[in-house]
Length: 439
Image 1 (tube, one colour):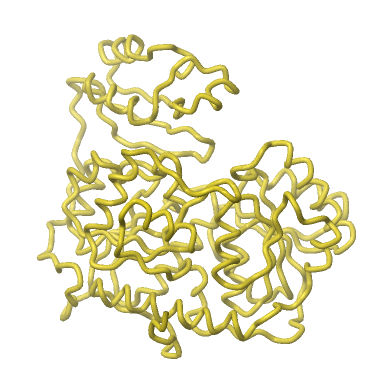
Image 2 (spheres, rainbow, N blue to C red):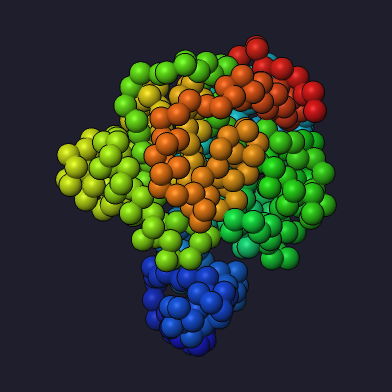
């Protein structure tokens, strides 16, 4: 429908003649993207959903397949859709009030639900490990929840937003203002972050800024992933965010211990789609991966189906081992992180997972996510625009420059994370060695 200047006539035709419909729409509000794709519509996803609502086209379900569009299943006017019976709400616990006497029920808003990236599954798995003794309702984070999903959320004590890149030009979550108007639930952003081009600040449209502020108003203290994301929140007036790092950094639930020269193969993580950088850098990335594969003969790690094509070409060319889960879950990645000698590559979450288990990690970055994480943890950052292949190869198996400093930072962040969870009445499974906030 983005090829129509005004999709409303076609939507009206569907509303008048159909019982159900499945269709997709892209956010066409960015003029540069619109020009590249030859789209005629200039609607955002919010504009499209407002048009659906105006025509009484009810969204039964929606999904972001990971290619910059959203797919909708719709019921048309007058069609009776069976409602799903849900659990009755319990007596709620207030923000910061210990549950006491029963297991808390948490609405876990996660991008891993019907996701196509093992990184999102790693975040959810880490959050579950950090919160012992809780019951979870899995709910979508990337698209607006259905009526049935909203009812399931309302039956919970607290909603936890599993940290991912929500703070972008357009708020990358289904928990926008229209959903917040309907959802009466305390919400805790846990390790949420953002992304922008390297050397540029994170920015967001006004509607997204309002949603972020409203989410933070629903908890006494929230958790943010990295310094650049914290700076963004400060710019929009959010003052209750604490810098904790990503939950994946604490997947091991204990202080990481770094050996001088860990045994095990080198793992190289692949990213087929570079973020926030001109597409011309894709060729440079492929040349670097080819040289790494040829000279170091690493194990190739994939987090997304989009990585498969590149990985299979390199594996066939140089007879390399591949690591991935076809279901985009965490088992193979966790096992690999525990046994690799070191990791290098483009995947932030796999690198953090390896660090959580005491394995050196080097990151080739194309956006602020990686640069800001390296700033936080005192790690070398390989800016794809400036780092040459010789430097990348030199650092591939190099030990961390300052493992004691890394561990000290980890302890401080673990203490902060434990305090954030306690402020929201939640347990924390982190090792007792976590130190309280000192800065």
